[in-house]
Amino acid sequence: MYVQGAALDENVRSVHSWFQDQTGESLRLLFYICLWRLLPAFILMTLIRSIGNYYLLYGVVFLFGVSFGYTLSLLSIVYGMRSIILMIAYMFPQYLIYIPMTMTAVHFADRQMSQTYPPQFSRTLAIYLLIFVGCFLETYVNPWVLKLIIKNFSW
Image 1 (cartoon, rainbow, N blue to C red):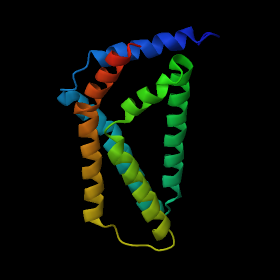
Image 2: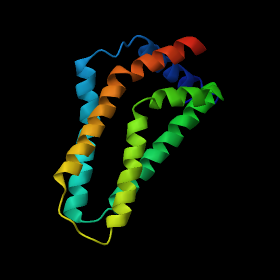
Image 3: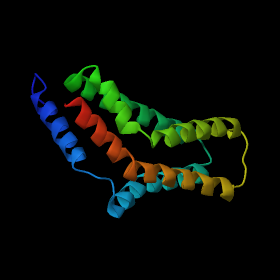
């Protein structure tokens, strides 16, 4: 990154031009997003069940917060206050599912911390189904939202 942020600006603009060319109608993209969302969720749930400790979930939520702050900071360097609108577009609509689901999981883990329960397969299946719905929205709706925001704000 150059001192004035020229390299960052160039990278962000190339990503936005890539988003403008996307239509969001790709089964390959759905598979890719599901791989990057469902596989970590499976690994996280397996580790939590095998270790018997939910503190790992708090670390993952912390890392999500750090990545959100990092992305918003980089966008702020390039776009200033317009970066907030762009960040909302990056997260819409899939995070309408991911954020409440994560908050519910943290709340549930906090209540269950001192007690051990057998795995509830119906709850696990519901979690994976919600993640898949989020992946579907991320694949087919989010590219249209990003395309609309990037086009109308003429970055």
